[in-house]
Length: 266
Image (cartoon, rainbow, N blue to C red; front, side):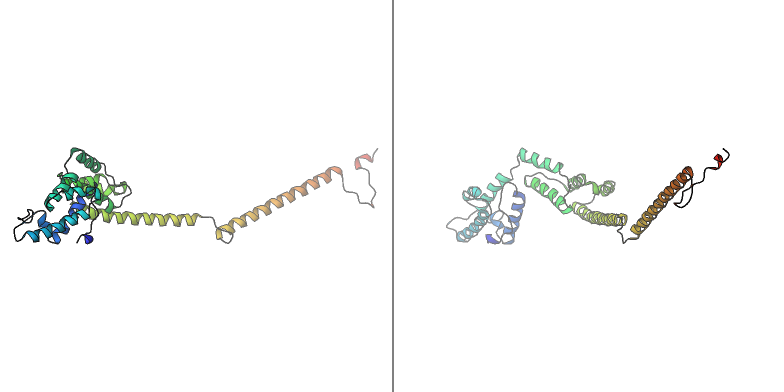
């Protein structure tokens, strides 16, 4: 019986979920009446039904003992009935102490989505509210919706602004569905923006030698080099001509140099 219970062992942080799962399991297998119902109180040992009750009660006690940590077995071992064992656990772990209330209330009021998914975020809110419920502090659905909206990440602000203008707020589960749709929309928008950015970067990337842009730039570079080379050649040629004019005509080795014209009259 105990080996197939779909729950974790009880500790000081999970009483709300543990008690719910254990309750449903015992109820489904016909043993919850030993905790609350017709079998809460043991019949007299001489009664004909005592043996049947004892077997059923032992199964419930074994089930409870199998899913608490060893240091907590005393709460079950000292109990004479399953009901007493259940109440012992409830008093220890679900006691409505001021410290526990304040702790959970503060955690609920300060919860923020940040990088959590919609499912993780709404589940966390629900878990805290359930923990408060286990110590007799009720958080109604309207407050749960307000808390969820107040802690949404920036990417959900347009949706939050729209919902806050509604005359009648959505239920908690309707809000969760709306948030999941919005989450998919935001994810698709981010993917589209990322793809567009990649295309822009690819288009802006310099081309190689084989690319059209590279050929144009290389061609312009060669033309510029040729222009500078020609200018340099022209400059050198002009300098040589100027020097020849200033120093006289060049004398061939087999010619005789004639005196300047201005000296003939002397």
